[in-house]
Every structure is written in structure tokens, then in C-alpha cells.
Image 1 (cartoon, rainbow, N blue to C red):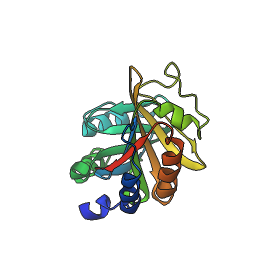
Image 2 (image 1 turned 30 degrees about the vertical axis):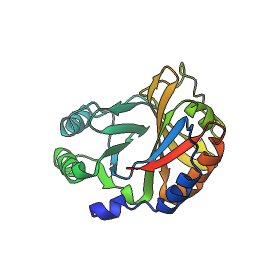
Image 3 (image 1 turned 180 degrees about the vertical axis):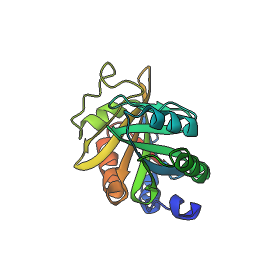
Image 4 (image 1 turned 120 degrees about the vertical axis):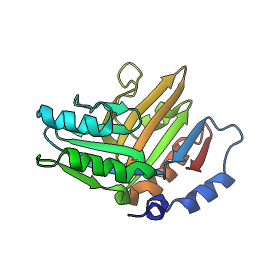
Amino acid sequence: MTEAQHRRHGLEAFIDDASQRESTKSKIAIEVRSGLAHINLRGNAKDQKFIEAVENALEQPLPVEPNTMSVRVHHVYWMGPNEWLILTAIESADTVMTRLSESLCGMSAAVNDIGGGQIALRLTGQHVADVLAKGCTLDLHPRVFAPGMCAQSGLAKANVLIGCIERIEGQDTFDIVVRRSFADYLLHWLEHAANEYGVRFTAS
């Protein structure tokens, strides 16, 4: 898939319209992260050779504990016992997939580009957890959902992956990955849910 195809997210109209409704005192910023590649990785987490091959290819740890993530050059999310989602800069996608495929050659593993079906969002600011709690049953208290944790859940009837990036003095940063077909609906819901705090939408 070409870089241009990856970058078209179909939410331009919503963002343009939302900018007209933007509060001058917005406490929450929501960014459509269109410059990312989405790579699905499957393999045997109990196979040390598999783990080492992936970590050598990515040059960072592979999260094997349930509902954790590895955040360095790439964001690697634990999705299940034998499945991970890798988000990386679009410019690095071909290199990452080639290195993974070469490192895993001969193993029972799979590497696939799934960027055409997903959208990544980043929510930053005060009250982000309060907004998400309006439509999500996860316990998002900092003692329970700390940085480096992730979970698949429902958010306003959409299936999403939520990752906690940072929580510093009331300024939270969460990433959300949602299916492309639900992205417009979810942004409308987030705008409504965050209205009392003020929200600003942008796209990378």
C-alpha cells in the first residue's frame, strides 16, 4: 500500500467541521494519527527463538504479559496470547515488515499490514479518562490502568484498543485504535462526550 493511501483517513470533513465548533478553552486534544503503519504480528509467545527474533528485528522488547505494551521507536501492543499490534512511522513500515519476515523465516509466524482497516487516535489533556469512562467499562483509575498498559474493550458501542501512554499531574495521554468503519462515529461520540471540557481535533 502506498504512503498516500495510508495517509487518507476519510475524517477530513469531520475535522474541518469540528474546528468551527472548537472551544477557546479546550482541555482535551484529539489527534488522528494518520502517519502510522499498522502491522499485525502472530507467533508462539512460548517459543524463545520467536521472541528473540522479533526483539532483534524491532530492537525493543516484545510485550508478553497480558494487556501490556512496549513503547519505544515502535508501539507494540499485546492483543492476545499469540498476537500483537505494531504501530510505527509510515516511512519505516517496509523496513520493519522486511526485517520481521526475514527474522521469522521458517517459524510458525505471520506478519501482515492491516493499516487499511484501522485508525489510531491520541487523546491528551485533562479529564481524558473521565471522557472515556462515559462509554467504556474499563477501570481507568491511575492505580489500575497505568502507563504501559493496554486493553481491548468497547467504547460507545465500538470495539477499540486503548493504550495508556502517560499520566502526569492530571495530564493524561491515551491512544485508541479503532476500525476505520467506526472512526467517524467514534469521533462524533468523543466530541459530544468531551463537550463539557472543550475539545480540539487535529490530524497528523
